[in-house]
Amino acid sequence: MQQIILVVSAIVLGLGYGAVSGGFAFSSAVCLVAGVFLVTPSLFKFQLSDLGLIRNQLPSVGANLWVNYAFLTTVALIIGYLSGDIGIAGALFLLALLPGGGMVMMWIKTSGANTKLGFIIFMLNLALLLPITLVFGMYFDLAQGFFPAPDLGAVDMASAGRQVMPFAPFMILIVIPFLLSRLARASFPAVVGFVEKHQPVISKATMFAIVFYLFSLTTSQMLFTVPASALMTALVATGAFYAIAFLAARYLTQNTPEGRAVYWHIATRYITLALILAVFSIDTYGPTFILPVMIAYFIQIGAAGFLRTRMLARAA
Image 1 (cartoon, rainbow, N blue to C red):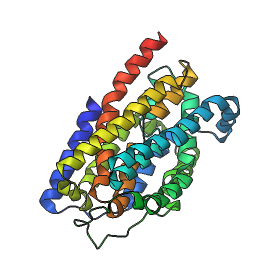
Image 2 (cartoon, rainbow, N blue to C red; image 1 turned 45 degrees about the vertical axis):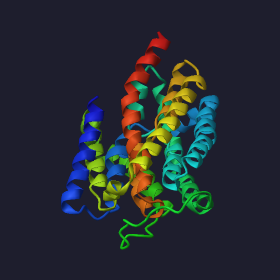
Image 3 (cartoon, one colour; image 1 turned 60 degrees about the horizontal axis):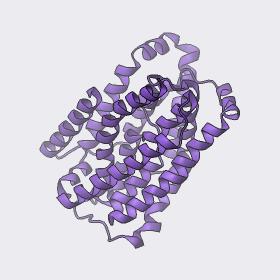
Image 4 (cartoon, rainbow, N blue to C red; image 1 turned 60 degrees about the vertical axis):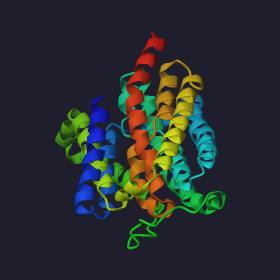
């Protein structure tokens, strides 16, 4: 409940500030903030030797790969096509390509899952950011013939055509945080100890700041131009995608510590990263693109506690 209140407050305050002030101009520095304060702390305990665990957990790692990147991406493509809106379809495809997320380790730790395996899968999914960005970058050109043209009437033409550089998310969210974590471990152990002690507070504060900033952008004000019918379509489509993701997590994983680690990487999406990438894409897909990502916050954060309770009951 606390996370829901936090996110709702950030969204409402961000949209309100943007409506009154006209909104901020986008700065890619927000990606660096996400990398430094959300990803770097999770890497403090990571050792390259930990990658050897993959050999011993090939079934679990394989399940993460095929369920997320084959099954759920196919589901997202089908639901997106049925929505009839390329913005909604593109956002669902992006969510499908971004399993796990900044809070996934918290759910893994509190549900009796294999924490070590969960972290290795988290790192593996992050390492796939480069091919994921490349694949997503091709989606619009391949799919636009199957949908009506998006309504770009409210797009700020000064920022139109802005695109995600394929190597940028990989560098900012993987390479730089990894180098910072190695530097901190070697030279600033007191900083590492402080961050690890207060990581929940740091993560929540960072998430609030990022969500507030992104929803206060000038481009985010395009949400006020979205018709009610598009909002309802996005709600149904996103709800259907998550329903299938939850069912897949429940029935395609085993009730073991290893299976539970995979479970959370199927049931959750990296919605903060999706929101950052959505800002780059709204000028291409139109204002409906941000709707599934916004709705995902409410569905995922609201359902996570319930899913953990059910998982613990099954384990007992």
